[in-house]
Length: 309
Ligand code: G3H
Ligand code: 13P
Ligand code: ZN
Image (cartoon, rainbow, N blue to C red; front, side, top):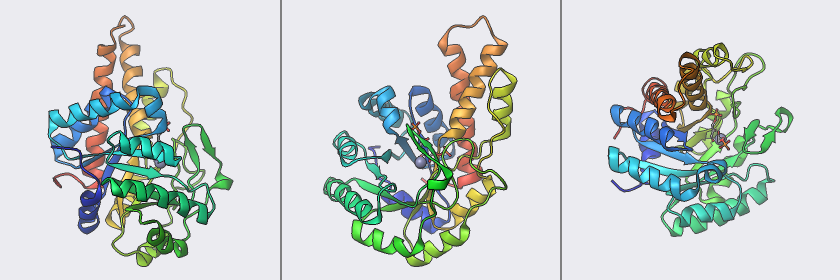
């Protein structure tokens, strides 16, 4: 099975009232955990690579590992650049075999966001690659960029149609109250489903993307802290809200922090219980297993994309 774009996956997800999972990958164990989970439940997959992941593992290693995972599982997989900051990084990923890129122009004024996004779309579409744009601004931390709560802004439904038409993007990331990282809400979790509904009315049938969608499950935070970690009381997006979003226009849901927490909890627990271990295979096996379990849970119980191949 060759790499695929997310075009067909997201169209089917829209029609079927579910969402495809987009999980961040940084190394072999993460790629194996995710793809093995998807294989077991027959789910299409988007594996996404951030600029930080490319810096950490190198583009070539990640591509080859993903190719190996496809050979091993025969899954339809889309390889996607997460939060592309510039035309140059998008171009490098398109030239380097990715089937999808995100150009995140959300920090720019509307006209500049359109100009940059269209530049990427023109280059990508000529080469059969799809593009995700972003309108609105999520709070939180990505790579070294820290967006404070006061700089965050919900997506304006009155801008989406013009943005989609003028740029030609294939999907659109929006801001309706989620944020990146493990600390998402100060008070009660709240997503602006009213904004999502408005957006859907403006661009019916168009696939929407939700970033910052980790749920920060207490069991992982508790395990990390029990075995020497120090993560203050975190709060994620409740899973029932994600299910609701997936039944609406949201077709791609980005999850990274939950996998980091699951992996870290497994490593901490293993090392605390086996202090004599220094073989990385001994503590990375439970880490990979933990990734597999959390991803399976997301695919089946949250996103509803199992048995959709
Ligand atoms: O949205 C950001 C993702 O969690 C990737 O994080 O930029 O630290 O690799 P990263
Ligand atoms: P989380 O930090 O909530 O996992 O969000 C990940 C994300 O949006 C990647 O683009
Ligand atoms: Zn994101």
